[in-house]
Image (cartoon, rainbow, N blue to C red):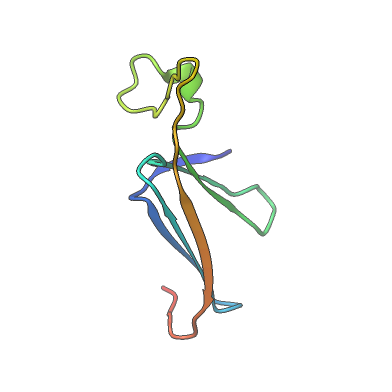
Length: 93
């Protein structure tokens, strides 16, 4: 089950086995994020999003679902950068 998490538009994910750090930065449009960890698997998915999970069904009465309703001809734009680097000096807790 995906879990919606709050975030500030920046994330760092470090893998101590490969000593690789992935950096994610997203514009203000992506003020929500989803973390998905499938049961019995050895991977996860981190996804910046412009809305909370199931925002279409929670857009009324929810404080900040991120639901954007665009009229014909309207558009919205956001940006995201994903980069990776090898680092050996980070320690795990």
